[in-house]
Image 1 (cartoon, one colour):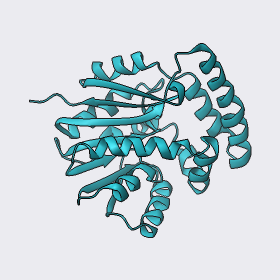
Image 2 (cartoon, rainbow, N blue to C red):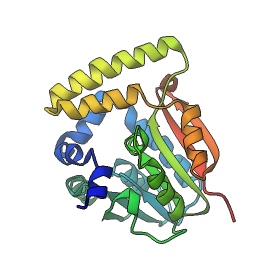
Image 3 (cartoon, rainbow, N blue to C red):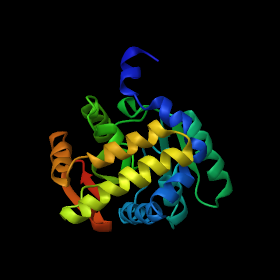
Image 4 (cartoon, rainbow, N blue to C red):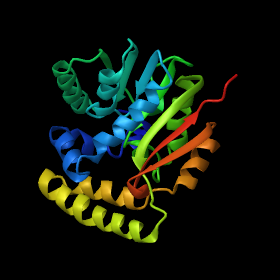
Length: 242
């Protein structure tokens, strides 16, 4: 790995260390709500009637495999991630499910090995924060996502958000501090990983800031769909049509 690639991957070791417990920790720490949020993102994806779908930063492929299982027509689904251990877990899960085939690709989102204008839909499930929160390479990631989308194609983001209600925001931050950071670190054995997850979610951008970031990098038609009082959201934007 060259120096620039290494600089783009400060979380690489962390995500290589956690895949064995990643899914069960997600269920515990969100009380199962992450499954419901991915289902909403999947419905939005399938409303586009896509032929080619890319799920970036797929991790253990929860979102890609849900798209595979819920689609009633045959579509091409590609799932990419920079962590081979994550992809290994994803491939094992895919073999146990009776969904459409998912192609797994080891790839850096800053340098996607796909053609320009290849995908109708690109999705990301709870990893957009990792690409953009205090990340000097955010523009490079977004440029690649835009490049590989077809004109008019949609980018769907399931991610944590900031509740507008002050009481809910306070409760959300307590939950992140106690439930995610402390309990997640204790149960997983990876305290540093879950501290990062809690801190980045607690300080992540407001919907208005997310909108500005995406529009500054060439996307249009921003939509924000808050969930669970605004502590999570489905964002969507499009690549401008020609």
